[in-house]
Amino acid sequence: MAVVPFHIQNLMKPAIDSPSAEPTWMIIVRLLRWDKPSGRLILMLPALWAAFLAARGLPDLPLIGVIVLGTLATSGGGCVVNDLWDRDIDDKVERTRTRPLAAKALSVKVGIAVALAAFFCAWGLSFYLTPLSFWLCVAAVPVIVLYPLAKRVFPIPQLVLSIAWGFAVLISWSAVTGALELSTWLLWAATVLWTLGFDTVYAIPDRDFDRQLGINSSALFFGQKAPQAVGIFFAGTVLMLAGLGITMPLGFFYWLSLAAAAYLWYRQYRQLARGPKSPKVFGHIFRQNVTIGFILLAGMAFSLIFNL
Image (cartoon, rainbow, N blue to C red; front, side, top):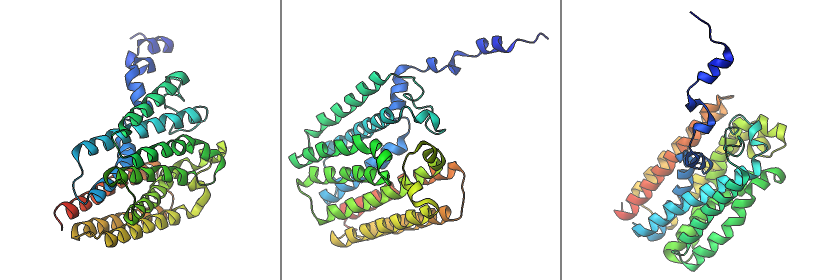
């Protein structure tokens, strides 16, 4: 049997192995991170929490559609902006080196065009909202755009990301009521603390790379105490959500969902506190927070719609 030289074998490989075989539209989908629904859902959830709570029941269906499309556009645009800032360092990190701009599968000009298109779609949707919601959308843009810069100059950049996440609560709530109230700020605080928790978990596997590249993260800032910090953030989330349940007030199903969420967050903290973990564990914890978010959404909806 003849032996085929190695360079000839490479030529004989199926075209699908080549990056060029991937269609451009799919590369743009990856650039927007729409191929990874967990990251999109975890922003959408606080916005939906706010809509149901502000409506004291089922919000208008067109508004739910605007919230869903708006969070997809905004989070996608934010991801592109992040990759534009980080395109020269993402290729040095195992988890991010295949991102389209880092891998040079798309040009910077295309990246800028995609980001502008995403924000333009979000801007168009914002006209469906109240004037207060519209201006909150405007205020959120600098926070979203400057978050990647915060990683270079601020010791806890996840706080900036958490504040950006918190705008989802303020925008959705004011879209329903045209105003903000005490319950809004309790939900906002819960969202900020929750985001600090799960995004610190997400940053732990990248600590060595971030240290080498001179990039800040909450996982680096808290160091060996990162599991304890995550535990405190999740405990603070429970306290804020409990305050929300008392203030509104909310019924049995809400408290049942909050108890389930608190139990799962405690398990996550215990898992982190046991010591070094495989990177897959951190990804699992991040994705589990999407499930927790849906548990809370179900509890809110059942409590408000059925008065239970």
